[in-house]
Image (cartoon, rainbow, N blue to C red; front, side, top):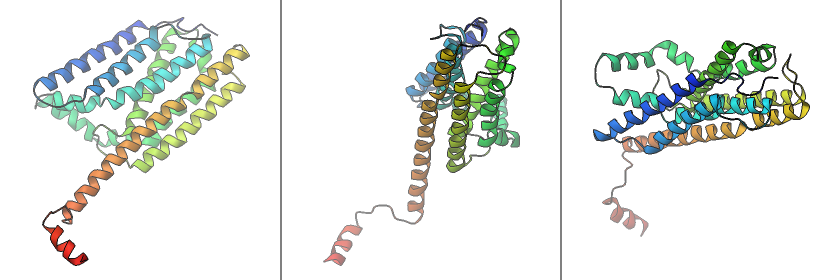
Length: 273
């Protein structure tokens, strides 16, 4: 087993920090022109970018396998959720001036491929299915000796995790918004598949990997701890569903003329009497 960060990846870490700077400056420009943009989203994106940068180059806790699993949870679960809840696509659409670039970006979110790419079960297959392929075949053992493959795997983990969080949370505008039931159900199934994978690693290491039993089990527990991120994702889905449902109920009441009218109070009181 190769020690964590035998192949440090400073360029992706710098790219993550550069993305944070771009986000914060864009949000600042949006506020300066008088538009509202919650600062908690700045903090969320900054935390996600910093977490990804740390996972690529920072010192990781525990032994080699434990450090790798910490890297997996941060790059594939925690950082994507923080980045997605900052709504970067919405920020870009609001900040770009009216013109060709903004129209092109908006058109890109409306194409049929974008709708299917963010189809939650498909996004889950790319994410969790990719992890099963990585850890239950000899692919992971090969990354120890091939730095380019090591970097590619990390890019996939981050990209697939971000796509999954984007599809399940459903915060940014895309061609089709899938139902909360489908997104929540997909999250439940994906979380179960991720948990089962962690349990198989507790019992047996990835093929071709020589790792001490103690390190293997600690690393598997770290991976299983990713369920906390899944719970946070479920909370995001639930809050989003509640907000959408509330707006729909208020709109339905307005259409039915059920808004509160003080002039109805005497009439109602008379009927009661």
